[in-house]
Length: 431
Image (tube, rainbow, N blue to C red; front, top):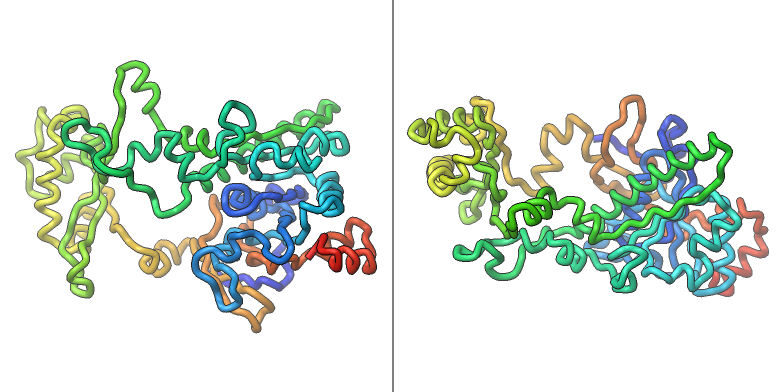
C-alpha cells in the first residue's frame, strides 16, 4: 500500500484528465462532496466552502480520530481545499460569488431554491460567468411537485422502489415480509454523487464543443437522488409494463436468475458461534453443469436444467442441493474445489479481510494517507478512487484538510489583503 503525505507538495497532476478545471463545492455531507471527490481525484481543483466554526457536519460523523475529526471526512474530502465562509452573511455570499465567477463548475446539494434565495443561483452567477456549469444534487430534482421536499437518501431509496426489492419475501405474495433491508451505507447519496460527476464531465465536454463553435453557454446538471437510484433498477419497469410483473424482494438471491446466492459454510474455528457464507454465481449454462459435477449432483444436470428458465422453475431443489454441500465444508475447502472447477465464487468478508487481502494489496486498492505534517501526523487508510486510468497517477495527493486550511490562500488569489482578511475573520464572515 502506498503512503501519501497530507502536507507534502501534491504529486504532479497536470497529466490528469481534469487538470485545469476549477470546481467550487458548496455541498455538504455525502452526495455533493462525493461528486467533488471524484472530480478532484482526476485532477480538478476543488474549493470546498464550509461554514466557520463547525464546517461540514461530516467532520464529526461516526468514529472520530485523535483530533476529533472523522477519518471518513478525511477520505471524502481528499484532494480538496477548504475555505470557511458564512453563507448567511451578505459579504460571505459576495466572496462565494467572486469564486464562482473564477470557476468552471459549481457543485451544490442544497434544498432547491436555497441558492436562488441567496442570489447565488445559476441565473445570477451565469450573468457574470456565462460558461459556468452548475451541478445540482437534490432529492427529487429542481422541478416537479416534490422539488421542495427534503432529499434524504434513505427516503429517496424508498421512493425509487429500491427498498421494496430488498428483504425477505412473503411466501404467499412474493412481496415484502416485514420491513425492507437497507445496505449499511448511504447508497443513494453516493450513487447520486457518481451521477453528478458523470453529468459534470458530460457538461464539460459539451462546453468544449460549444467553445469550438464560438459559443459561450453555461449548463445546469440536474441530479436527483431518487432518479439516480431509479437508474439502477434494471428491467423492473419494462417488465411491469409488458408483463404486469411487480418484482418483490428475493432475500440473498436475485429474482429470475439461478443459481446465484449466498450459501452457508461451517463456522471458522476462530469464531465457532458465527456463521460463514460464500457467494456462488453459476447461472451460466456451462457453469451450472460444472458446479453440479463439482458437488456430486449430476442428477441435477440434463434437459430439465439446461437453461436458466428451466432452473428458475426448480430453484428450490437446486439451492437446497448447493446449501447441503457447502454447509458440510469450511469456506477454504469450498473455494479450492469451486475455483478449481472454474466457478465464480467468493467469501462474504468484513473490512479486516479487505484491508489484508492479497488482491487489494497487489492493486494498491487501499492507500495509507498521512494527516498533518509529514512525520508529525498519522496515517489513515482510504480506499483508492477508481477507475484506474493508464498513464495517470491517480493516487491521493493529500487527505481532507483542516477546516479553513486554505482560506487565506484562496482569498489572497481574489486580491484581498491581510487587513481585509483579519477584518472578515473578526466579523465572523470567514473562519
